[in-house]
Length: 135
Image (cartoon, rainbow, N blue to C red; front, side, top):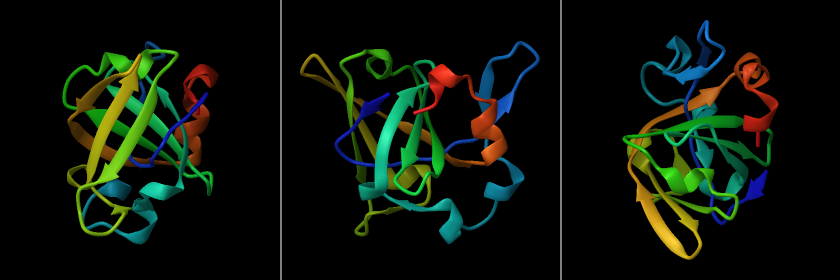
């Protein structure tokens, strides 16, 4: 588990028959943003890469989010990685992928990763994640 500078994100886990997780927005995340689907970037406490295209973040209130990247973001898997999650809107409240900017820093090399999805994870989805992927 690693700590990071700023907070942020969302995405949903659905286990495949192979035991690997794919992330897609569940029906509960459809429609306009609700307070339950939003978080403040300053609340993010920990993160862990789930492959090089997904970041799992945990807030101080023990809410979990999956952030899906447009492409590969290999720095997220580096043991020395830190993350800077920033709001792209005037408030620090993150409700959609468009609200979020993610920069992963490893060995003093910053890599900005375009965010494709942001999904709140249910307790069942968090429990289904392999222990090594939970922040």
